[in-house]
Length: 273
Image (cartoon, rainbow, N blue to C red):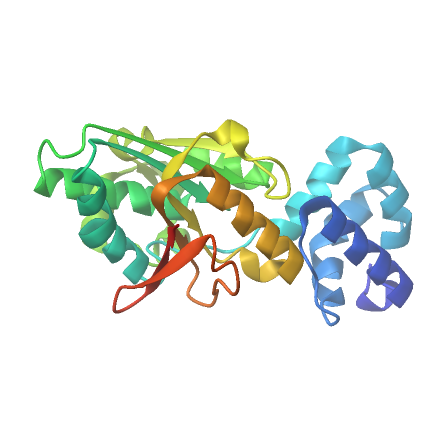
């Protein structure tokens, strides 16, 4: 499939379909992304165009899952932007421990596991510095991509993946080297995280209630209406006074009745009203 084989009509139909299924809004100039990410599937099915693919997706849920997977798997980093993890360790966790000894945390759009495992390392370090303050921690990490979740559960990363933000001292402390030069997350870090498949357009009520929600670097892919809906429903699963952390390029515009902005210097987080 060449870029020229994706007609404007097919691109528009696929773009509308993707937004309906998972909320992701492709820009006008993203036809190359559709072409490159679906090339393998189109070749395998021995068809020529995305237009031919659409009715097949409608009939076949497994194929639909593969197509959404191909379009939503994104690169991720360890300790991305740094300050959210500092805020978690120096502000949020001490505050929570003043009133309780348990922590419930949701990491949305967790991709291949780098963010939830980064959070788990921060929790581990906080517990070491503050013995007895925190006695139970539960983290739910969700993503729409079954491929990403499978990789996250495995917890094995090659040198290229680890080179994207993993400090050497934490690598040595929290990973075991395995065959082929890859490294596996130690059980003391991985056992804290439960990975589950979740489409952010669907209900969150079965996930539980949370003291902290990380929903970072995913809202940028949604329309403003879908974004507002997701933020409203996150508010519904946050415990009173719970915190929401967004990505560095994301802001909570509107919803003043639901959240108050907290300046952390550097960084901004949002507290449930």
